[in-house]
Amino acid sequence: TCGVVGFDENGKEYYKDSYYYLYTLKNALGDYTFVDEINSGSDDVWIYKYQNADGKTAYAVWCPTMDGTEVEDFELKIDGSSATLIQAVDLDTDGVSSELTVSNGTVKIHVSENPVYVMVD
Figure 1 (tube, rainbow, N blue to C red):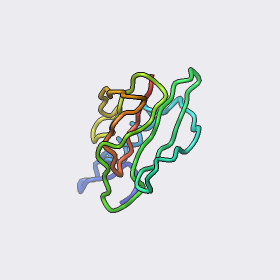
Figure 2 (cartoon, helix red, strand yellow; figure 1 turned 90 degrees about the vertical axis):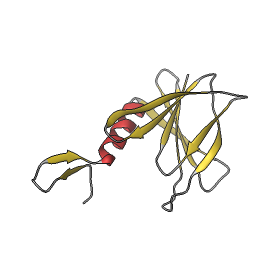
Figure 3 (tube, rainbow, N blue to C red; figure 1 turned 120 degrees about the vertical axis):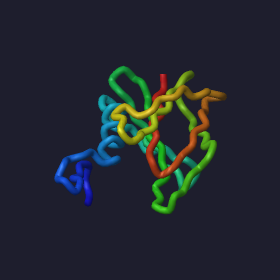
Figure 4 (cartoon, rainbow, N blue to C red; figure 1 turned 60 degrees about the vertical axis):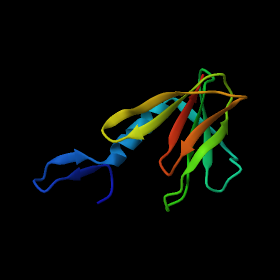
């Protein structure tokens, strides 16, 4: 009942949602290295900062709760002038990407218990 692969009633193997979420993590942050945990100013939001060899920055942002906590319009301070949000979804190993609007060095994102990745250019 745990892991990333399951078997249906006929014994056929299938990928669980966790498979796609882990694969999205690998695709988004595969060549990045952990830099630091960033203080979000809230116990409900955790932020990890990553950087790759080219000096690009990425952030993983999520609620570390197990009660369905969500934070609308969370303002994430970033180091860059443009950013892309990547959200993991079922049946997609790359996740869904959307451009974010950078205003005064921050982007507004919806944060839930499912991590999102903010890729900064």
